Length: 188
Image 1 (cartoon, rainbow, N blue to C red):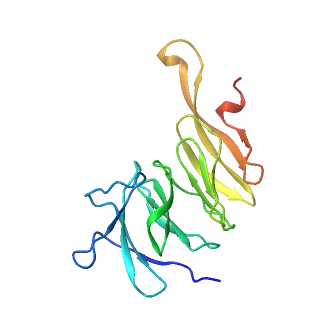
Image 2 (cartoon, rainbow, N blue to C red; image 1 turned 90 degrees about the horizontal axis):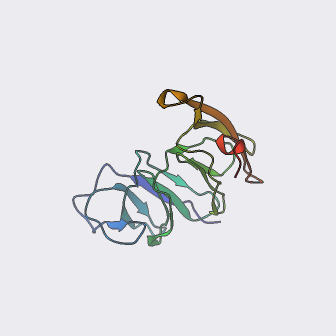
């Protein structure tokens, strides 16, 4: 079994030492400071990843227990990084809003419209669209994610005839089926 990747979130780009490695979805370098992480290799050396941010304020580093990778979320943009490879092995999302705490070894992230799950082996899957523009109060019990999804209901005529509501939903992490939410009651 390999050792987990060691990392350190830095407050900014280091003023000295080797040049940072720009990490972006399209592989293009960028000059501005992003979310900065020092990643340590097994031989004791390290490299600095300057990860291009997405469009939210959610950032963090999350080790994958069953692999030699970490997941870095930089302002809503997701990157799979390996200590020995200074390029992302996979990129996902630009608008990740947060993580759902859970007792499993899954990483369960959410956006405004869907849930993005990384299994312990590093497999990424994304739920079907759950709502129009907002998820909140997410929790996970066993293999079921539940929460509230934003919806707008027409209750009458004109501008005054619309009402903002939060409806409950569940996502089964085994079957990947969504129950509830605004799409459950509307025809295709």
